[in-house]
Length: 492
Ligand code: SF4
Image (cartoon, rainbow, N blue to C red):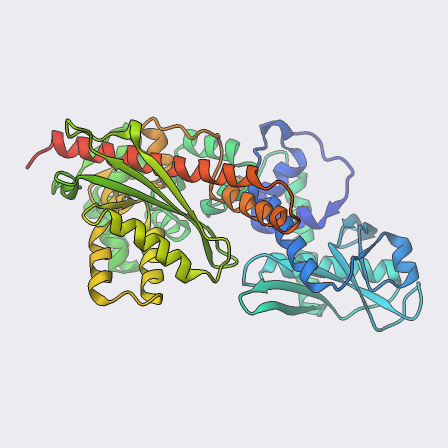
């Protein structure tokens, strides 16, 4: 990995935030090759969240720049503060997303400012607290007056919620300690190790090089089913990589993991089998019961996939792909029909259920295939909330088939994840847009909502969402076809 000597550049709140998320990330931000970065929708979604929160918070447009502070405007954006500061008297630079005028005295007059951040997610995390504390200290040193807190604003179902982060001595010492450690990491000529919490990597722009390295070196976190705590347990048992796990005796591992509880010891055999499948690149079927017998006599099948806005708790798109059998009794994918049911307003549950119910009742005997539990939970909950009776709910439950669950309960695949993207890509499926994920669909939805409000041409984001959702349905069918083929070649 390339390393460039540490330039004398400032430490920003963004670098600190990324370091809190993953130490390696901050190192790569400073020394990594920018060409290796991959685009992620996460950052754009964060900015979009910030825009929506501030829009709701402020009664009028904020003013911009240091002149606005001198005038004492109530809300100011576009400010960058710099100061020599911290344990090594290093250069620190912050860019508070918003400054809010508060009571007090500053070098600008009989008022002062405090920083405000838009909080992503429900929980106020260490990342929020430390970056806000850093901003507070820089605001203090620039306005030449002290402040007691910064503000984190979140958007919830109940509206905006406000959390003050007080500038206590405790948080200051945490901040100084973090800055010191961050500096030490940045001065090293090699990056810190890949994080054990690999879930974080899906949101990170360095995931391309880190995933490649983890796979090349056979990290334990590459084995599907191993998270942070299991990884630690395995390391304690003297197993440090995928190869070692694959060749471990399962009685030894089962006995060792007993001290952590039955759940872990019970998983020993599965973990070893999974590591073997990945090491050898082989598919291993461990349960021979038919996987999808319900499809053998079905006249057709519905594939179901939803797109959601988790912050708003809104399922804005229910996509259905209808696949009939042709006259020869084969599945007629060439004439499959995709039907997106778009729910524009989040409170339109009864409209959503009416339309979905109509769709389902048009094909009463057809199984509904989906990938992952999200769809079955969402549709069942919606039906219940809208007054479906016991018989209808039971019938709905019987018709839903989760392919993710079916796969996981029958096969070990040579893959580090059993997510739809991974499994369908392994089976040769290609999405029309490469590198797109659920976060992109959410971003397009937010863009579409803004265009709709401003009465501008709003077709493009919607077309992208439909195409992505349609492709997810087709990918789900690709997995279903593979399962059916396995059943045919493995009759009981
Ligand atoms: S991809 Fe993962 S390990 Fe690599 S820098 Fe990002 S969060 Fe850290």
